[in-house]
Length: 219
Image (tube, rainbow, N blue to C red; front, side, top):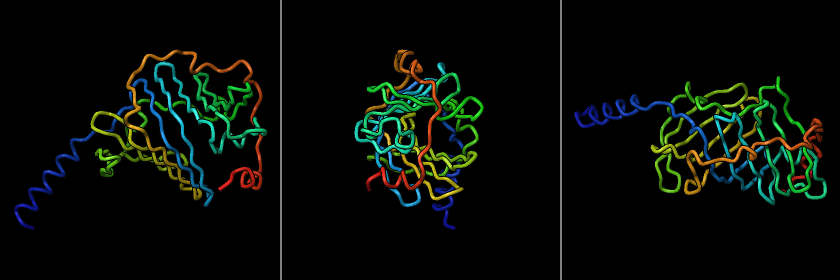
């Protein structure tokens, strides 16, 4: 190994060792393009993510034209399953799916099923896996294994999210959210009603079969 190579390797090791797993901002808003691949079935959505650690809540808005698996599975809006749909992880520790325009909702995940908003320290035990460029910006990759997925979070030096990649290690399911960095708002003033559970959210979600899903989603 030459002196130059050794020095470069040393500098790299020192830089990597100085990196610390990122915290999620206490609150944020960001828009995204989302891609799902479920056993070869491909779906893409446009949406936004609003998060508040203080309110222990987060909501994903899936915009008109969405092919979101949870929204379509719910069968809440058979006339127009691709209408604007919301996925709410509320502070009562339940996960709700609803179509706000027609006021139909169901409970996808109950309190004892661990479907909650992410903690700010979600990545505290993650490992640095290297950098990628997103739209010309260097983003650091942090990877952590959950109960059923390996999650990778790419973020800039300034804490702007670049991408969330999730890969199941139980089946062939992959999920990407690539964020619009220009849309990111750190700690915005949030109206708590954004995370309010609609008063018509009372029933548990029903499920469709895999054949039904394949028929519903046009690829």
